[in-house]
Each structure stands twice: as C-alpha cells, then as structure tokens.
Amino acid sequence: MRTQIQITLLISISSLLLVQQTQGQPRGDLIGGTPVVGTNTAASASSQNTNTTDVASIGFDLLSGYIIALTDELESNTNRTAWADKQINDMIPPVIKAFDGKKVVLEGFMLPTDYDTHGKVVQFIVMKNQMSCCYGGPTQIHEFASVKVHGPGVNSVMDVPVRVKGVLHVGPHRENGRLTDVYRMEAESVTEASAF
Image 1 (cartoon, rainbow, N blue to C red):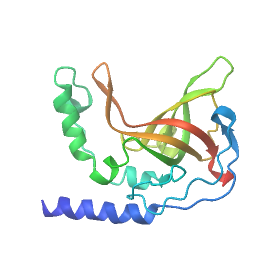
Image 2 (cartoon, rainbow, N blue to C red):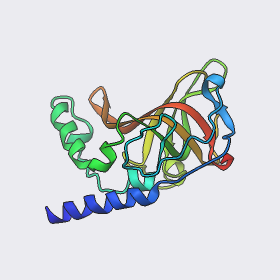
Image 3 (cartoon, rainbow, N blue to C red):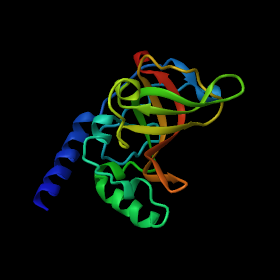
C-alpha cells in the first residue's frame, strides 16, 4: 500500500514537471479550417482549466509511466468485461484519470488506420515512439492513443512527431470483448510537432 502511494505521488509530481507552454501559430492541417493560435498555456497538468483556450499538454512519459499488467483474461474477456475493465481501470493512476473528458495536446508518432475517399487520414494511432510500431517490441496498451479526426481528414505524417489537440478519453475500450485501447482522442487539430 505504501509503495502504491509513493508511486501515485511520484506520478503526480512528474505530471507537474511535464507540462509545457507553447506559443506561436501551428502549421499543418487544421480541422474545419479554423486556425488555432497558441492555445497551449496550461500552468499545471493537474489543474482545472478555467479559460476555454487553456489546454493541458501531456506526454507519453506520463501516460505510460506506470505498470499495467495485462493477463490474457483482462485483454480478451467476453464473459466478464465489466470485471476485466474494473481491474484495468484500477491500474490507471488517478492523475491520468483526471484528464478523462478534458482537452489536451498529446505529442507522438502517427500510424494511420483509416482514410477518407480523398486519401486523407480520418483515424490513426498516436504512439509513444516509432520504434515500437514496426521494428521494436510490441507497443504496450498505454503507449498509444486511438484518434478519430473531427471534420475533414488530415495529411499522413509518419516520419516526424505530431501534436494532436482534442478531447482525451481514459479507460478500457473493447471491440468484440477484446481490449483495443485505454486512451482515445477526438482530434480538433493535428500539426507537425516541429511546427511549434
């Protein structure tokens, strides 16, 4: 119990150190054609946003900075999904659960999973790093977020990091009883990280 409290405290402190302030006009595909001007001004990742232009900047060092021990029964459970989802939810630290339903900016590498009829990306996975995608070990369930683009699709950007701004959803998500992700985002904008 003491170790769990220490880990939670360490993650809380880490989240305060991970927040970045970014200014400037982003470049890249903006969904809906509306430019977003320097909105990433969150003072603390754990603070409540009081201004609608404040957005918490979080990273995979926070989102994947804890141990998530998945068994076969937790990953693929068609008979007791509520039980399995509770076990997984209990592994996610409260500091991360606090971002559920909040607008955030998340940086990572894009892996497109669905395109529109014009060849634009409408769904993708944003991952902690490229190496775990194709060349390294398997990506852990908390090292990526599934992203759905709201509005027109965006260009595929796979060789450089991207920044995804949108609403983050935290918690297990299943398709046909199989765990597909623990992080999902509804993207408002997707820009190259080097654009800032």
